Length: 245
Image (tube, rainbow, N blue to C red; front, side):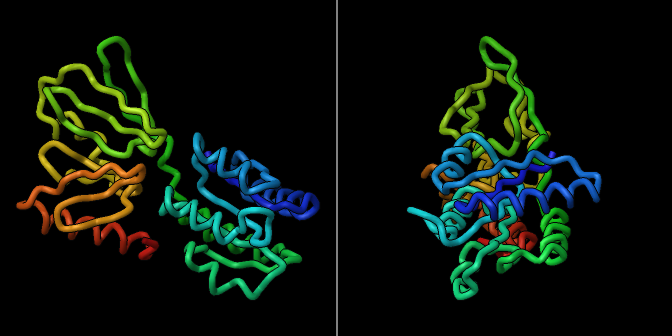
């Protein structure tokens, strides 16, 4: 299901955008969970446990501007779609640091918003419902691929690192690491960069010749012999996302 976050400190503007979104969803027979936030801090708190496909952000807000909010969203999610909706056209150039899909000025033109939603939803990554099931020493876990930062093979088990900082260890595995993670590696967002590591490319913050730095600061090595293939795969991934990194 499509997840949409709208953040605007003006109640009337928030409700207007929400009503337009509802009208758009009804016209296109789409299901979505639309969350309304009247303060940037509320949205930042929600982002600690939730992922959104689309953010619609005001720019002039208390404490944290929409520009800063957009940059913070991009730190954690390089693929989500961002739309700015503001009364201040002079911030348009600065706004593009967050790679928004559009910059709309208020009062919002419904047709422009609907056209932008068409594009945003066509680009939205709706794969977050894809899951992977594995056994731990005492239970069966079902996890969303979107929540994985990386996987590490160690002492005949796989350590799953998640976006919330949690680490979970599988039970002892008999197959190879690559075979165990084959279902995950079918997802184009994942890359095996070392015999003992695979990474979620959505969570990469820095790429160098010998390692990836992931969200949360975790550093994952790149095998020297695999570097050319890893580099090409990662660059192709970035190009497919329009160079938003």
